[in-house]
Image (cartoon, rainbow, N blue to C red; front, side, top):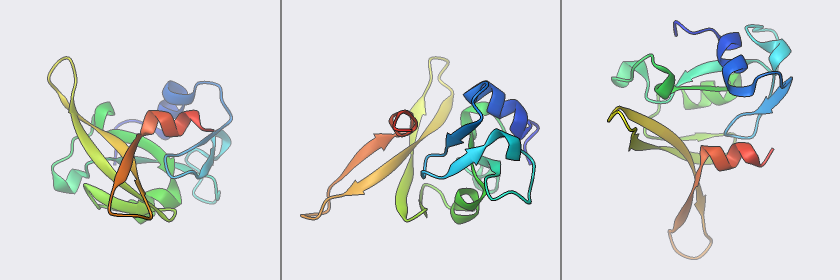
Length: 126
């Protein structure tokens, strides 16, 4: 459990937006924050799970739909959610602190190649 609240993170990430889509393409509603009875509930996900050495810091936290979070569970660094494949790419910030970026893996029909689509680009699609 994070020391940060879902509503606090929503406001920091999405501001006054009433709806947003998580990295797997699922719709979340601000009004559904902390409402386990809603099909649009956003939840806090630790990209690198706490059980795998991840930290409860903003650089390791992402808001995602409850179904996406349930499908990912403690999978790391590769997982599937909403029929798509993702992995966590390790990066270092200016202060040399490690953070992870969620990347969608797009498989091509010929061969085993994939193109990495960073989370920022996924958010811009919606």
